[in-house]
Amino acid sequence: MQVHETWTWLLAGLAGAALGAFFFGGLWWTVRRTLQSGRSLALHFGGFLLRMAVTLAGFYLVGAGQWQRLAACLAGFIVARALVLRVTRSTALAVATSAPEARHAPQP
Image (tube, rainbow, N blue to C red; front, side, top):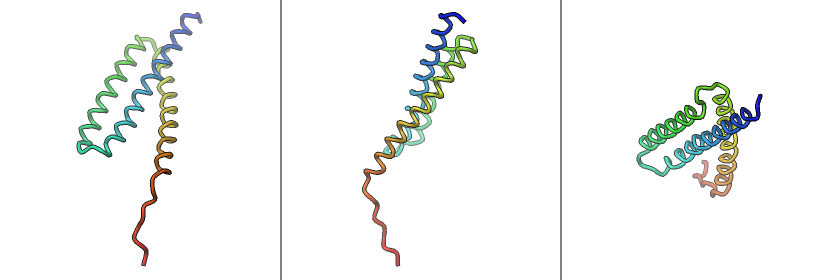
């Protein structure tokens, strides 16, 4: 293995991480915006098309017909998924714990 190949795979992994952050971060943003929007179907469908188009184009460009680059890109994509999941969980927990408790009608 040459140094050039190592750098190529590392850059492909970083590109995959960027694509993953875009895809899963965009998904999180879309779901949060849906709660406030009256056009939730259009927002979900439009967001899905945009995320898929950018992600598939990115994988196509990064892969350049080499399975090693695609594998490195996929590995970065999966790592980004785990990171976005961790960040969004901690944010969601912070929002949930700061929200006032709902008051329900007393039980008979």
